[in-house]
Length: 107
Image: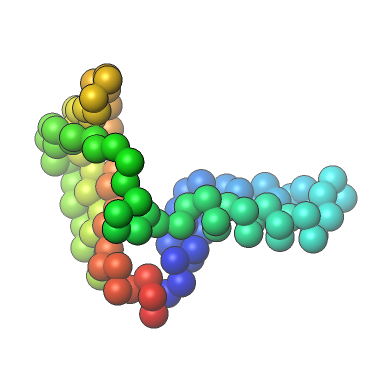
């Protein structure tokens, strides 16, 4: 599976694709420009590589609400999670973490 496929299948990726399709169908946007937008989206969501992290965020897991393992991809839904960095602390009511083996991204 190519890296961009994981992101294109996410909620934001699907919404972007649907919106671009509607804009092309209505004539608001050219197909070429829609493709360029998707290419830029793919570039923006490319996973971080080892050594490219510039800051550290600590995650206090809170409570594990749900977890799934399907097609070699883990999905965790946490409630009352807390994110901390050097400057701030943020309390998040609900967060979804999706994790997969990085070897799957290169196939």
